[in-house]
Image (cartoon, rainbow, N blue to C red; front, side, top):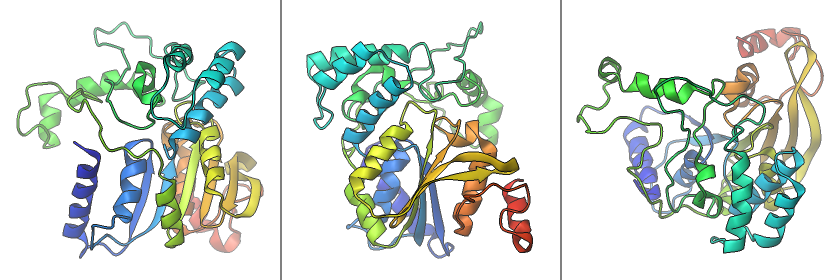
Length: 335
């Protein structure tokens, strides 16, 4: 399925449902949704959209050059790669170009070698060690043409996300291929001849993935769309370093500088910076999919986002973040 086919599908879905939708919120992460949903809102060929006014982006690819630069910087800064590997990449790779040189490929192979033995999606969780007959290979098939244009050419980029249980993809594959489960989900009604996998080889080429979403994000901000960008700070896949470099490239005015935000029991949940039209929030100790690693903090962020309330920049005890007259909202946040 091509990139614009997905956008077209979503637009048609919203047209069918628009009479039932008063307001639509987008909460999204990672590769596909980070690129499809903004273009769904800003598509010059479409005359009708859902009433999209708010958008929350988590650990998402947004710009090839800064994303890939940040991935390498983050790996070096977190003692994942050596000085030699880091310096080779800096000398031999130009991430503003779509195709790497042979010297750059060699340098990047040394970078990806590390992520065969530790988890790219969270540097500090264990990897799957399983005696099961189920394959524990957590590699996606390589799909040509996806963003980022250079890193996506390497097998190491295509590791599957595991979440808080590093063996979860193994269990999921078995469970979702059970006939009774597929029947309950009304799935596989056409009786396909191959098993369900987390990422299949049916789509070998991705032909129209943009190298940067920054022009689109600028248009969305100018159009008054309220945007929060989140980043788990232990993610090596699309790390906080990449996101910060990307946001700096946008050149937005800073309304409120870097400050901590607090979660329950007076603990720092992460940091935030408020730009003109965009809020950046980091989450301490979270990997690529924040809810998998920090579910309480993820729910707190979602509830604040939906209620259009800022996260607390001062320590608080459970139940009084918004004062005695607003305690019911915070109690809901921590459910």
